[in-house]
Length: 169
Image (cartoon, rainbow, N blue to C red; front, top):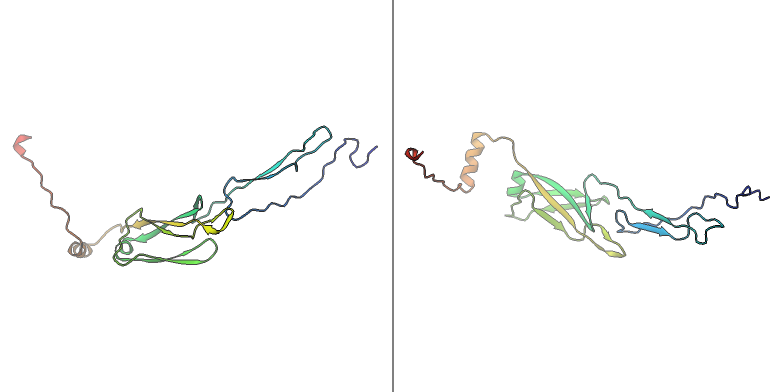
């Protein structure tokens, strides 16, 4: 009688596997371990083990292929007059993002920082881009003085004329 398998012809053992996650691997990418699964005398070929990667959500960045996307809030004054913001990247580096003189940012406008996205799988020196979408925060109210100042510096709205004859109604 075999004492190690208790006459079952198989025994359970822990066999650790080393899983290497390479830079640039993506959500649900599979890492197969061929013939590392269950084995028994009745089965000619052992089973396979497949590790499926699950990407964790990040509170700031969203992955889209090799690119990273994020939303940055700026005030209306920053959108019209210029801005500088510091973005802390996933690896802790800080990136300065600024608008060019005279450049106005509209809600939904995007800027790309080339090469600051995710590393490309199997291409360790190549990276995707960091895409920043801007959300412009408008003030909830304006006082009369501010409205008058804005009317003086902003272009006047087009004058509208209505063709309306009350006698035709």
